[in-house]
Image 1 (cartoon, protein in one colour):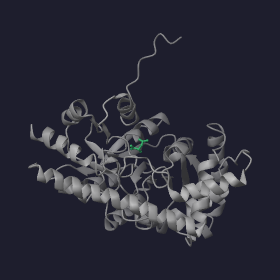
Image 2 (cartoon, protein in one colour; image 1 turned 90 degrees about the vertical axis):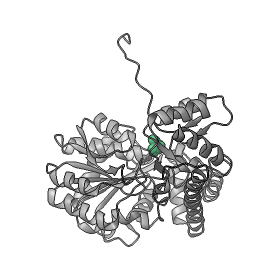
Image 3 (cartoon, rainbow, N blue to C red; image 1 turned 180 degrees about the vertical axis):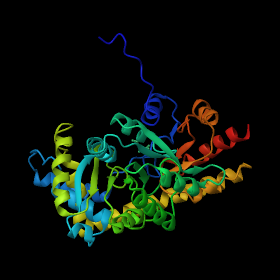
Image 4 (cartoon, helix red, strand yellow; image 1 turned 45 degrees about the horizontal axis):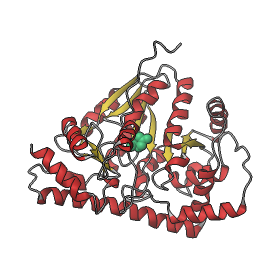
Length: 398
Ligand code: LMR
C-alpha cells in the first residue's frame, strides 16, 4: 500500500526545529522558528497566564464539548481586540468569529470555506510570504500566485509593484495580506499605503484575507491593528486570521481565530452556519483550555494590564536585540550595512544572508536560520548575541 509513497521534504520552518533539537552541540541557537524566548533563553509562561490558570484550576471546570464555533467569551474578546470594543461592526453584528487551532487553523477553515464559496478564485500571497501560506491554500485546492512585496535593494516594500499587481488581479481574487509584522521580511506598509491597498481591493472587487499572528509585536496592540481598522471602516467584507501563540506565549495550546466581516447581521448568521459545517467535518469543535485562559486575561482588568505590560516587555526586548545585533556586527568590522534590521518590525528580519551563508551558520556554528535568510530576533539574548554576531561576521566576510 505504501510502496509508492515518496519521502516528503522537511517543513522549511518546523523541520528546521526538528534538526535543531537533534543537534547535540550545547552552544546551538535556533533563529529559525518564530518563537519568543526570554533573556535566559527560556520560553516564558506569562504571569497573566499563570494567574488565570490558577483560578481555572481552582474552579476545576468539567471538560465538556465547546460549541462548534468555540468558546463564546473568547470569540467576543477576540473581536474586541481586533476591531476595538466600540467598533460599529460589532454593534451591527457584522463579524463572525470562530475559535481556531492557532492562526494556521484560522487560515485553514477560512480557506476551506472560501473554496466552497468561490471554487474558481485564485489566491495571491506576498513575495515572499510565510512559508506555509502557499502550501495551506494549495492544500485547500486553490491555485496560488505571488504579488511583488519585498525590495531587496532598499530592504523595503516594492509598493508600486504590489499595487500594480493588486490592480491587475481578476475580480474575486483572494489577496492574502500580512496585517502587521510581515513574516518573513519584518517590513510593513505605512498607513497611507494601506489606504491605497483598501482602495485597490474595493475597485478590483478582491477578497482580502488578513493574517495577523503578531499583534502587539510591532508598535503596540492598537497600533498594529491599524490596517485591520482601515478595512473595517471601508464597509467591505473581509477575512482575518489571528493568533495568541506569540502574544500570550501559548504556542502549544493552539489558540487562534478566524473572523469574517460580512455586510450585515443576516449574512453573518448564514456565514456562521456554513463555517460551522467546515469545522464540524474537520475537527468537530476546538479545545477549551487556551481559549478560557485568553478570555479570562482579556476580560479581567488587572490581568489584562499585566498582559499588556508583559507583551510590551517582549516587544521592547526584541527591539533591543535588533539594535545590539547591528551595533555588534559593526563593531566586528562588517562592511555590509545591517541598519535596516532596526527598522523592521515583529520577530523577524530578512537578513540578506544567502542560503550558503545560512548553511555555514548551521554547520560550523550551530546557528539555525531559515534558508531564505530569515532570522528570528526573539531568540537572541544577552548570552548568545555575541557568538551569533561573531558567526555572522565570519560568514559574511568570507
Ligand atoms: C514561523 O513563521 O516561524 C511561525 O509562524 C511558526 C510556524 O508555524 O511556522
